[in-house]
Length: 236
Image (cartoon, rainbow, N blue to C red):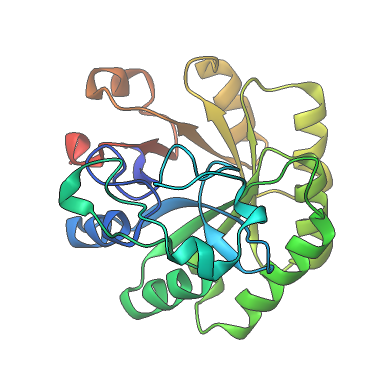
């Protein structure tokens, strides 16, 4: 059985990542799942953005959490990728949840934090927005590289499935999976082994792997539950 294909930041190989147009393209392609990244603005609005600065993916500069939503919305998050996408605005989590609710799209929401963020406050805000939205719990999978984030999610978001992300699986990761009763473990395909992933599955966890863009690599990962790809169309 082939793994499920998850659009990485929408269809980020062909569209500006984490943007509405990228996520809509995944919907139009018929994908069931996309992975997106969230973090707070200066005025504590959760927005869909991977980097902690806007430098790479917009015509602006500075940290996301140093800019208000109004300032972020004034930036162009499309032209950096291609001028065809000029004027693409950053999405808020609220806008994303509305789109997913309307279309039935499932979201793997990765919580992006660093030392300058208040993890507890971000998780509390995320939970409040999820609870207030009309999206079904089954449409959501919450994940992070941060063990602190994952523990906060486990404490405050018990109704939602949780996925631990790691570059290389460590003993600390394994203990965390058990501690928070995780649904899945998300591994870098470059550093994972088949035996390792099968052992995780036998322990009751789904194994999702990132970021696979070459279909020829898929023959090594047919046992996986899901793979993330910037070019999901290559696997369909």
